[in-house]
Image (cartoon, rainbow, N blue to C red; front, side, top):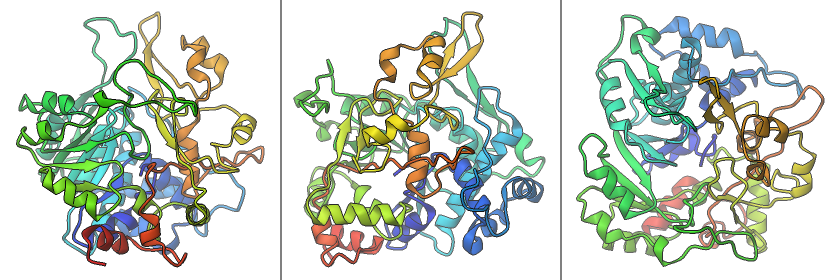
Length: 462
């Protein structure tokens, strides 16, 4: 549900039904900047900004990005500087403010719990992003795409208003080298650093082995787990063992990849099941297996409160009604190297011709990988950047084959795609889970449905 599909509107709508509404914490700084440059229709962003504890910080953000009435159609958005290991305070503040805004709006006007989802692989923005969400009172932190071993300690430090740091993975780093990103609440807020309520951490894992590894030590132990199968939308874990592809180029999963729910239940921590949880019978089965409940993405991604561009949503619903909606688990699309679910919509970045015509560039850079240069300094590379640049930086040319720019594609999917100075417009890239059997129950007359309809269907109260 990343990059604005699981927006504050959707999370708030879910929370108002009594369930846990979760916003995506990915690329919120870019979304904040572009929403402000669009003129902040409805004034929601500025209303949330007015509640941030340091007005001077808010004014700097407004001065830099807000455009009354919105930028003219076709004009490029002002870029947001990419993050690096040596994070500037102004850059951390933008990340913190953006996460504050999204969580504040999701929690506004009710007292139900709200969570925020992050990717462990995206380590550079995490400390500032988490702190911004905590300033807004976030109740849960959900984290997947890696093992969040240092996040419990990070939450403890930030809740107490102490400086904190997070290790950063650098490919080729030599033994003894220390690479990390640090944050000091006093640098961001001055002397008025509050004591905050610590949110609960839910680790998203794909096996009982990983859950047991995190639970064995109180330093790494989360407050619960999301146990996710390979059918979930977005990224999924690689199959265990050697990667084997079927005739359609999709990874083949086998018995070794099946979730051992019983072993997770034996750990004694609450857990939810995710991936293909498409109906009330799945919820009942999850509870029978000891789970607290289920995590659902795709059904909400296609509801009215979703951040998905409305025209794209209508196309997807129409294809589903015609039984022509296809979701592929592409083994090459993501620069991360993990399989990624892609809807092959005509005119989107999943369209081979459309993507072949796209200039290769990496100007958002959230999925860049840090690597050690020969002189010991740290560089950044992404398989979706120009091939010659990636190879020049020491990357393998085979990594670039089929690799898509997820950052720009997913931002475009919520209607905030970049317009380049040469007139090129970034195409969207849509991801969903592979099981859409819920749609006939929710979109019976083709008029669409809302988040409350999804909850009622899953709870069996329709």
